[in-house]
Image (cartoon, rainbow over all chains, first blue to last red; front, side, top):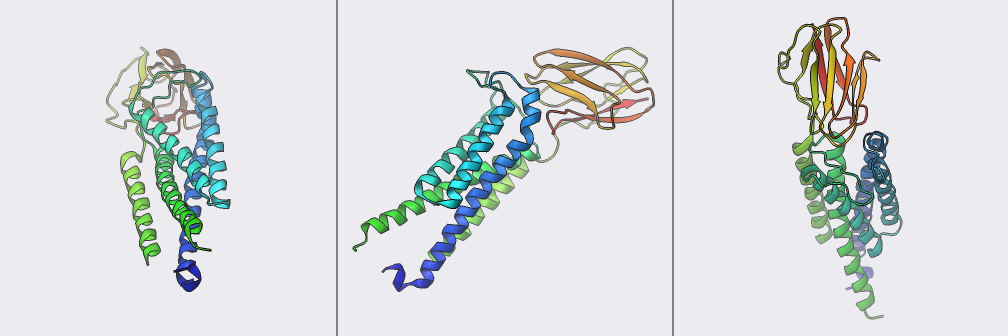
Length: 152
Length: 126
């Protein structure tokens, strides 16, 4: 059963793939936007080590690059990068919300036991981005397997 | 059909994430309990204690009173009046202290932290 014999299905699969790429990238861009917005204040308030605001800028840069990668390529590697970026950010925000992790290495103490709109928005975007990237990774893997496994 | 079902599932997951996140954290964490809490008269100093990114209960002070601020958090905070430059104090973290003079005009003065947009408090001058 090739895609050529089911053109309707092929179009639907393509649309789903594009939707997934846009949603994943969108989640990462929201995450990046929030971090960019909060970075100056957090840098001034917590400049120890590398500075919390600078960490926010690094996270924003990673999220933008991963989002663009997924948007433009939609490959398995792109989804893997997006997954790592989104999940690491999600774990970090939840960890520092609930656990008073002391400063270590270049990382300052960033314990902040509250939720507020921007923080919640970025956490939701990161969590959603990780889930979407995982789904995209699985789909891209199946597609690759089908392509390489199909008789020529 | 399968792709359509997966897309629907995707939306459900997104909505669930959104709902869970909003339920857990929307709104300001700063306390807005009874304005009478922490009331003090005269010109003696009263103290705003910043802990866990919150200012605590609103304080009532006399016009022109000295207000002390203690910051228990690790991060530096500010006590900055929302309305112009009525008062603005920066307090370093890990037990840092600062003072400022309360306005001489009676009224309610909301304030915030310049660095952390979720932090809001109120100083009542009467």
